[in-house]
Each structure stands twice: as C-alpha cells, then as structure tokens.
Image (cartoon, rainbow, N blue to C red; front, side, top):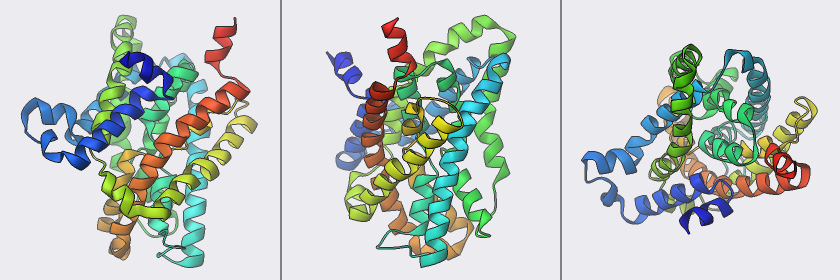
Length: 318
C-alpha cells in the first residue's frame, strides 16, 4: 500500500519523505535530536553523508566510454540552470540593488534559481529517464549548494570562488567511477544502493527545513518558487530541446531549489558582510521556494513526459 502510493506521486520516494522530515522538524524537532543512530539517520545531520554515499554509488555506474554523452546531457542542464539563475539575479541586483524588488531579495533569487535538488532530479530520472539521465546527476551535483551562487556573485565582483568546495563535491563521484571501472562486479553491487538511499536523502534534507520559515517567506517566497520552476524551467527545457535534441522532461526535473540552498544566504553573508542584512529574509524566501518547487517541478515533469515522451513510456510501448 505504501509503495503504491509513493509510485503514484511524481518523485514520491523523495518528496514524501522530505515533507515528513520537514513536518517532524517543524512540530517535533526534539524527536530527531535524541542522539545516537536516530539523529544520525533521521535528522539533517545525516544529509551530507547520505548524499555523499549516493553520489559514490552513482559514480560506480559511470563508464568512461559513456562520459561524452553524460557530459553533454548533464552539461546542458547545469549550464542553462546557472545562466538563467545568474541572469535573473544579477539583473535584479543591478537594477534594483541588493534589496531586490517587491520584497524578493537579490540574494534569495540567485541562491534559489541557480541551485537544483539533485535527489529530486535523480528520483524523477529513475522514473522517466534512462541511465545517461541518471548519470548526469554527477554534474548536476555541482549546483546543489553554494558553489554556483558564489560563482554568479563572483562574476559581479561580490564573492570569491571556493575551488576546494568544487573538489570536495566531485570526489565521491570520481572515487565511485574509478572503482566501478576497475571492477564491473562492484558496479553491480553498489548500483541498487542509489535507489535505496533516495528516501533517506529526502528525509534528512526535509529534517533541515522548518515549515514556519515557509510561512515567513510569504508571497515573495512562493513567487520565488514559481520563478524557479516556470521561468528557470522553461529556459532549461528550451536549451535541452534545441541544443541537446532531447524531449525536455529533464529540464523540468532540475527546475527545483535544493534543500541545501536554504543555507546558501548565510554562507554568502559570512564571505561578504555586504549581504549580511539580507540573510534572514533571503533564507526564509529560499525555504519557501524549496517546498514550492519540490511539489510543482515533479508535476511538470510528469505532465511533460506524458505529452512529449520519455524513455520510460517509449520502453513501455515497445
């Protein structure tokens, strides 16, 4: 019964645990902080570990002969996501200043629109995509955090680029790829673990979200989520179809805001004190965008895949 319900929800294996984690963290936060294995497994403390192991397992599935295809497909999604997020954020910043427009801060826009939820993407690609789509997460993992936001701000002369963060992000994938290419049996062994970890990643990321912040984000936060999905998503889908010659379902799958993006405004504020006055407001707006995009992007992916096709439906029709 549980599995049937989760399969009916687009990216349900990720989204439902994420919402459960957010609910628990909002109303019963101490229940996740009793210590030992409970805290390590079900709280936000386990998010980085779960995601790191997931990236390692994903890396074992990457074969060197497939890398050109993976780089092309993932690169189009990654670059287009970055371009649209940076363009909107920098344009708002240059025209309206750091405070942004209509209560929506420049920092929140760049933080939310340049970041995508890699775990939601992977869950959707497991449902609608193929192995190359799934492997593309190795590249998309680069925008799941502060890196691309800092690059966008750095392009405006507002922040430094943390190259070590880039290296730290890709090491689990690279190690997994080396192991998988050295021994085919290790790929067979680790590959299923990527799917098994999806609900745990969702739960731990959700455990870092406080739903009260979504309410505090208010209308600007909801608008930010809609911008990330419909403005950012439309541009990514356009690039995916025109440049990549793909159906476009993957473009909607990356039109999310990463759970990690909630911490990005604070990270930027520490690097450049100029942004410090806007950190609190930007954080609540990004938190709202995380929830809004986590709900709408899977629905858009499902609708688009049904309308324009995807590997899943092609294989079912054969």
